[in-house]
Image (cartoon, rainbow, N blue to C red; front, side, top):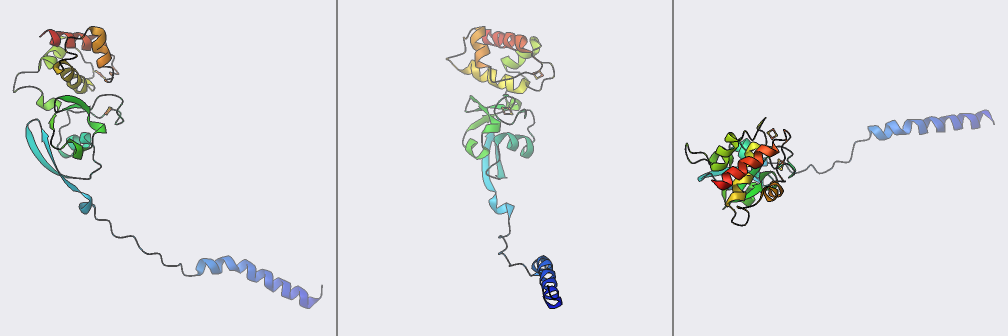
Length: 196
Ligand code: FES
Ligand code: FES
């Protein structure tokens, strides 16, 4: 290789090595910036009838009823367990039927009578299921208890299941988990309420 060829090859290699930095230094192609996000414009007016009282809220349409109850209205009696429809801790009544509030969008609960554990007693008079839970010591930590009581009270209000056997009650309540395993006392309490 002649001296001239060697010098030319070296200069060509140096130019190639410098290329990435040249590319990096090149001004980026301007991308159109996304439109500004205004969360307020994504909010919807939602009216919920809870325990006989109307509440007007501005909610993200994706808000679960459970979160609207707990975070927006501070009705924390309804518990968040799994947040996936598997434990029953978040059970409320919609038009008298039990419903998992973690799987119910708040906007879809409009126009329905929503009852939470806070609205089950009539003044100072406990619902028969509440009284029976106390009598039978049907809770330990109490975290699952509001959901258990809401499911049981809807169950007993249903003409088709109100006179169920212990086996039928157990089956009907199988969506409500109790990590303290207070199941025998829960069933005894529901049977007591059933008799009442
Ligand atoms: S929190 Fe809704 S089912 Fe568990
Ligand atoms: S009483 Fe503790 S989870 Fe049921």
